[in-house]
Length: 132
Image (cartoon, rainbow, N blue to C red; front, top):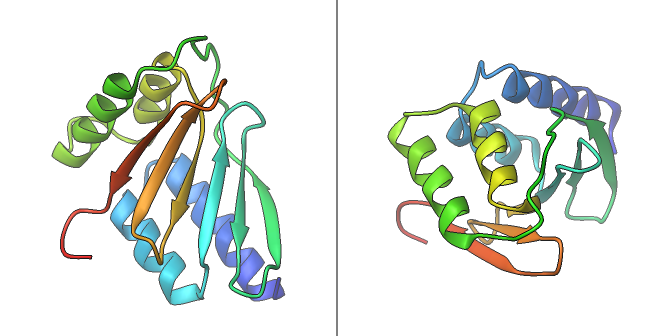
């Protein structure tokens, strides 16, 4: 990954983790940088950003503890809705999806969706608001 893009996604990860930017701002920034998708691994506390040519980089991210064993799609959806309403910010969002058994999620910018998953492969898909 180009050094300037890597530095950019490192800063973006810090900004997201410190709650100084919102998810829509993250998405717009990643699109502008040419990032295709990213994976947030809550257990490893890292995000991996992928470029269209397959090059990627892993960045340490917000630490989440106490991830529930059982996956609750309804719990993940409730956390997403709370974030969309502006009721909670990123760290509380992570706490809530972890309480719902989510161990990670993929965000595909081209596909305009996030796929949340549990320990045994259960998933919940959230499409970005607006036209696709």
